[in-house]
Figure 1 (cartoon, one colour):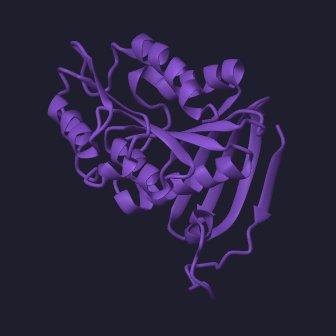
Figure 2 (cartoon, one colour):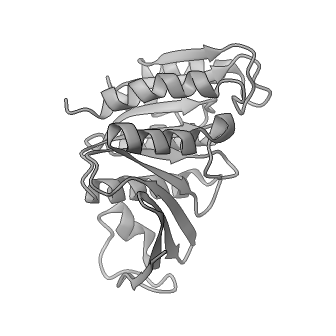
Length: 241
């Protein structure tokens, strides 16, 4: 494995920048970064900032024209729901569809503004590596992050899928416009009721709520159904318009 480390030239120690940040990565004020190629087509990237460490697990060669940004819940995490759905999707999308997946571990889990900035920085990384269209995925709290980053970056984020999303933080979902929007939710969710996804869909004025019978908040029973639907929906959504 080969590791690369570099200083970014951004302000250190939280010192104010000389100019207002104009991109998400500038707003992060990255102090330094390092990257390791774990296996061919799978990288581990760390961005060190004065307000925490942003970790990205990156599936893909870096030449893909489409990408997925995958976010966890209020506690963070990189696997997603359904017993590692994000790992499963990342492997399959890179292998079979030439689509990158960036799984992010937040600097400050459960801080909606900070996590949305983390997601926006990941979108910028994907676009900077050639992606022209991006899909945002988010579980639970991460559903609000996915909605917010899509509203903030409408020219880059082509669609959103949420899993057992909360409704708090999704008050701006109407800004998704007519973009594809999928909301998966178990009808036995013990933490966030199915109504949460229904409310977000109503706020958005668009989207499809997919009810997963008998499943709870982690959607542990629905991995195959989720993968089957998403491995069709994601490639269609990131395809050139």
